[in-house]
Image (cartoon, rainbow, N blue to C red):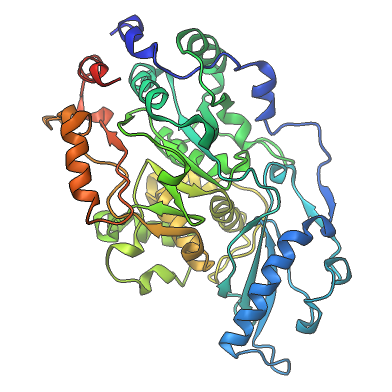
Length: 451
């Protein structure tokens, strides 16, 4: 099928008119920077003090503090790279510059986003007893980012996603759409998408996927990585350049059928997550836990679907993804053990976990949920969705898809009926799985009347 056959749909799509070289460079981590970045901890005082109040309250609630036996310690995490544990509990109310850790070293990959988290850590094995919500040091307010991984193979199918985003997305709620593409296809996507897509309030930035795997140590990208594993890994690694507190992951075989804004995905500072039972993909959970080398998983204490996590599309916490990367780097670098998984960078940056996928079969979302549970931050960041973010999907060849179920008056009436009795009713996407063989031409023809 030729791309020109989707022009009626593309005429409604998002604009790449500002996809300029400077935007590409903005999201390339190989900037001219020192190999390590020394930063005065006083720059983080806002986040540190918000978290100190949490720590003091938790110490009082748990009634476990004993200066004599030092059952636990308070630590502060800056993303997952800097972990600082004042030597005396009585000092934690002093100005940060007087705590004995006034200078913080962070790699250039942390420039885009800094988060501070207070943790109460058991002295004996460094497992995390309680954590505060990660506090962004710099905030863009109530805005989200969108992240899409894309290759030439999915260009036609993604045109439908772009068209529905243009129709239903509230531009004021979204900071940017990051389109992550292979290095060899960057110039193509800049030229083709820019010429085919019309204007929108949301900037779209082409990100060279290889740049996400470059840091102050060197380049880590491996062209032999399994492509499916790479696509999953990118959904976590992209957090290094996301500038908002949460981001929504997308795939090319998704379409939008309802208006979306910030409130669609985040309520009261917590993102919605789909409650998928762990039994649905039991091997993913088991394998991810083994890869992470975590002996404790708080989600195991939960009953039913609340201890699970859905698939793409999903809302991810930028700080949560950074914590997950920190644990993976620690393990792959040889510095990890079986504790709570809070600290980062024990053995340096390493992406062996991507290379291992064909034998370990982890998934990005199961690893993410497990690390957030181990760090005791999941409940600070998420609230369960009443119904899934995705509905009326096509997963397998032969599945029948009726667009009137999600578009038009009948769909609106059905939604009103369901959402009248279900809290957090946010089904806004449909997945038309590419492996189902569903024709992009046929889909475009069926939905253009609704756009």
